[in-house]
Amino acid sequence: MTAQVYPAADGLVQRAAAAFAASVPEHPADDGFFGPASVTWRLNGDLSAPVAGLRSLLVQALHPLAMAGVDQHSDWRADPAGRLASTAAYLVTITYGDRAAALRAAARVRKIHERVRGTDEVTGQPYAASDPGLLLWVHAGLVDSVLAAADMFGAPLTAAGKDAYVAEMTAAAELAGVPAGRAPSTAAELAGYLRSVRPVLALTPAAAQSTRYLLDLPGLDEDVAGIWRDIGDAAVASLPEWAAGLYGLAPREAVTEQRREEVRQVLGVLDALYLGEPGVLEARQRIELRVRQARRG
Image (tube, rainbow, N blue to C red; front, side, top):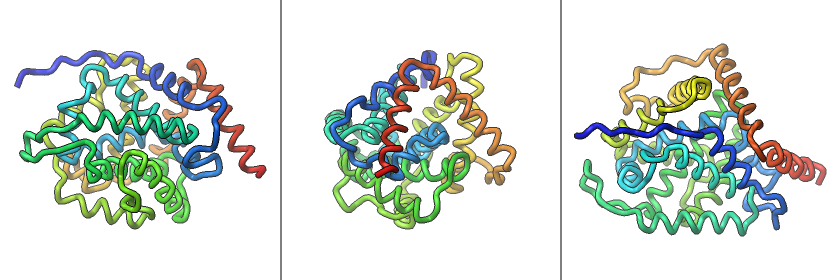
């Protein structure tokens, strides 16, 4: 196989920040599918979100058919920063946008998915990105990662809070195309679903290549590169044992409180960089204002 030459991940922070600022509405028509009093608003904006996002990609890549669709149809090799920014924009829109904006964003993604189909070179099986089973896998990988990252490096939820988050996020699954009632609605159901899928999971060459690249993005400036390495280490540390095993990693050691605090400090530095980008502070203020209004009733 010819060695791939990848471009620099130029503007990673700037492009992700711009996507965030542009996706938080100034004058929403309604509270969207979740609302400012929801667990989803709080958790999707948690400081641990970058760890959750990277962990979710590591988990999702272990499904051969999902990975084949990304590998054969995505532009992640040519523009990794753009790919991450567009994903962030979608998640911000469906979380904080009004219903019309969320529906438009979801419709655009579903339209793209209609064209993503082919055959996985490893298993020989056909795939389609619009397959509800694959959409459910991607959804579950994200929801599980958000909970795991918050538990380890952010603001952990109670058991009831976790159930509430999983239940609320079924709306996101349905927006993506998962049939109503199919997505897990409790933390226990989510864990059960992940167990049920494990027999088909594998580390394909495409998954190994893409995750190595994601964990060591070339072309980042020195400060951001160090932050990204720490986020990658945190994402790997938060993987479930079955996923770490598929990646060939040694059984993970317990994350010490000192290491948790180090990661939190790194996430705080990254957050400060985001806040320094145009429009981000104003977007955060819009979110916080709506949260305070919701608390006042």
